Length: 235
Image 1: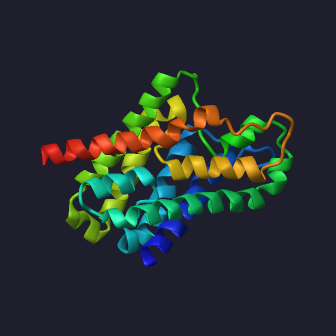
Image 2: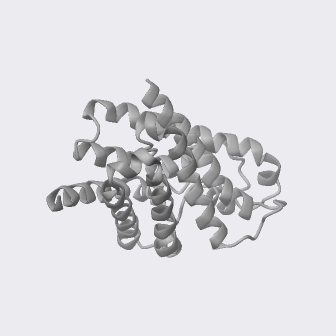
């Protein structure tokens, strides 16, 4: 139960800090509206690293179904814990997004574009191409999971591993972020997307875009599975 709670709170914190960056720079009347991609990369890197420092010893700081499934494949976590981890992560992602909607409620009201509001909570492609969009999320998550698996255990004991996680997130964002928003995580995309669907106001063209939304749900898991099998083959 402690591990499930850690995954719930940690994922909520990840979404709160990460999607908070998107709200901060995109919603009207925000004091930081218009900040650029460097702000996003730094902010999202810390959004993953900060809860990892807090909850790493309790649950391994997965906060991501792709990471959890990859860890189970490699024997790092019991398969019996996987459903509870994923449920906790999805609930945490929803709660984190819901809190942001309260905090930025006035700014959401001041923003007339439904697509801008949705983009604060979930990802979308810069060019809609199902095959390449899927491949982008697959490759980005492959890099994430393979790299996380490669971090030596002694780094985790010293806390250095969480700094390395920051580096992985920033690197993936810098290389792949312009393609699909580098979700790499169903709990970071699908759960806030659902929160947007049920909680956000409708400015006239509200659309959670599940026609695309299945990609950041499925592709990261596929990428994490392949990364884990390749890691085991090489080690």
